[in-house]
Length: 179
Image (cartoon, rainbow, N blue to C red):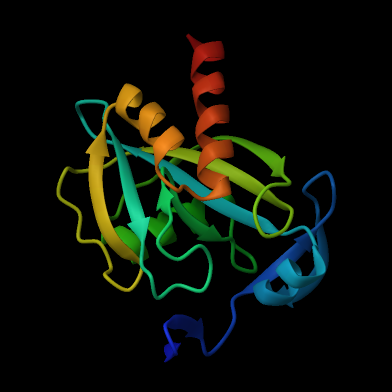
């Protein structure tokens, strides 16, 4: 459930996340995501690099109504890992919620991300998704498909979220090591 307050979209019920340690082990403490961010407590976030059959990458601009990074571009789709969820389950749920697609993303790697609003463990996935997506207008203001060179150029010119920069650079490094 979301409420609009001024121009920011605010969750009436904040997401609940599990605190984790420096090795990504669950500590058994459930807190609100808002509190985890405010206090700098480690928690988990799952994101997916979405590719089409031509190898292009889905890029989107966040709605201006969102409280975190309104109007910023993203090279990944994702969000917080809910209590009891795996990275893969969270990534699949976020793809369904934000893009209206049901696919099983593949977890590629996790890392401790100290960029953005607060430190968090980031699980980076990849998924092959259809060209036509039904993006949630409350979350996504615009979306389009870019080639890797186009995305590299856009990352230098457009205002992307910190997670997008870090996740995409590590994704490219991961793919280079695998080839």
